[in-house]
Image (tube, rainbow, N blue to C red; front, side, top):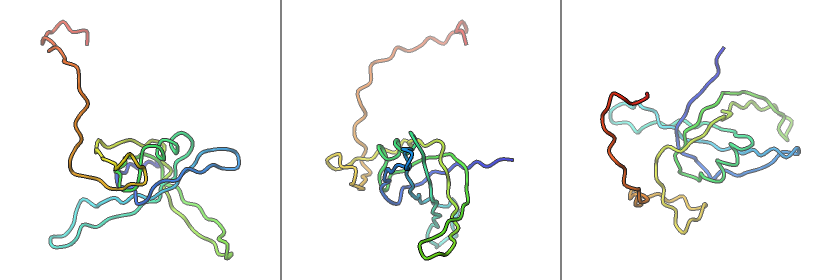
Length: 143
């Protein structure tokens, strides 16, 4: 059997790091994923997915991602039930992310404030790169 899911979307809110009673780090957030197809004349449709991350993955997400940032993740779909405060049984389906990564999108934050969700289409300058030598096209390469 196989239970794997790969998603890329935008965070709908700032992730918040929490910890369990045993000290494990956890965060939950949702992402908005645009559908690839839309009928002519209609707005593009969006699906929302609830995501949970544990331990170092949770810490990574909370440190480097904020509302509006694009995120790529891989994990598994999980369903569970729980008792709400009013006594009703609630059913939840969520993605438990094993791996998260940047998408290559550059985001400029005002005053390096993580709560800022503003993004600009202007890309900040790339860091200076050292000059690289051109490799000769040789059949003697060891690979």
